[in-house]
Image 1 (tube, rainbow, N blue to C red):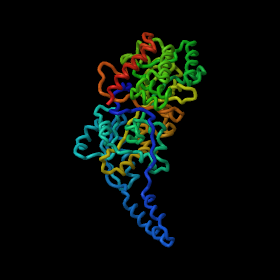
Image 2 (image 1 turned 135 degrees about the vertical axis):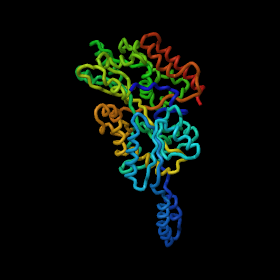
Image 3 (image 1 turned 180 degrees about the vertical axis):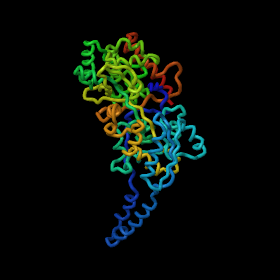
Image 4 (image 1 turned 90 degrees about the horizontal axis):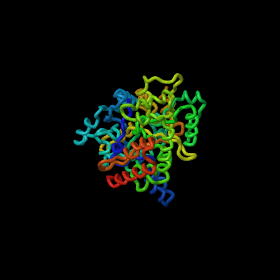
Length: 476
């Protein structure tokens, strides 16, 4: 399918950045607090009494623990992966949890289905509904402090396994405001199905030429010179809209997590900083290596002509998402063509490459009736059993090593983080509307003018800074 155009003001009514920091230790268990009086008992002959009383206290605590049984109400958005996988995963959860019945609701407009009941006080126990949707249900619950913290779920052991949830999730996914929406290190959104973005290329061409895949921008320029000598361009792009994921990855690689967050929240002077300048300069130099017909076809009508350039070996790299091979499945290609996929090269020496990714979210309403069972269900989402069910419908969970269990192109695409790339997630903070301009126009659309030579980097930076200042003033 064609890439969905991102609106930089679409995603959240609060900041959704990346690497904002995560992690809080579990709260002390009650028995530890009850042990103090026993330690304070002075007479030695009385020490046995508290010990004898501890057993009933512990038994009473175990008896008070909620049993994982009953009816769990799950509401899930039916996206392009279909509804059958939800039915199957709920049946598998029931089978592994005797005494539990899952009441499942799946719909393409899940917000319309569950909102009336929620207004009447009837909440689902678990909801799969991502941020950035038109109805804005997930953001609304976040604004109203209507979400249950999931940090303790991350510390739970995955049902049926011997590993904690947080240790199964790909690094980076829990260190972002896309999972910690309040920026306080507390997880409220569980990351679900994801799609990495990066650079696509013809692996067969590099093998044929004996060219090494670049991991730094210095290596990228060296490859560009080799390719130019043989009449091949280093780079092309479908439309400037694809520079969102591309530049977000560059920004994170250039300045790290806090810098990326500053960019996403329009911090004063951030676009004039040295870290930002590195990114602008890279794109400007990349313009010198961009296939000459790219700008003319970088529109919604002709963008596939630019994508065709890498299939015809007229350009090496093209930024895109995992939907590209399907979109170009019937297109002609060079004889030895083979899809290749890699992260955006590291900006700084010794740094890691970065891959921006989109992902969906699962959450528990604070008003959910069966919260303990809901947490168990969320933890189960990261089990190998659940991941296999989802993967059969091409819905891929952000689980460490999942690329090894996939086949074909999916194995290549989803192993990018297993290969050392850092996951980057998020977009600009939502604000009240700013008339006549958007950050997307200023930051991404200007790329065409940079490639054509109609604008300089200094003019680009000045324009982005001006628009960013307006959005900072309009932040909610």
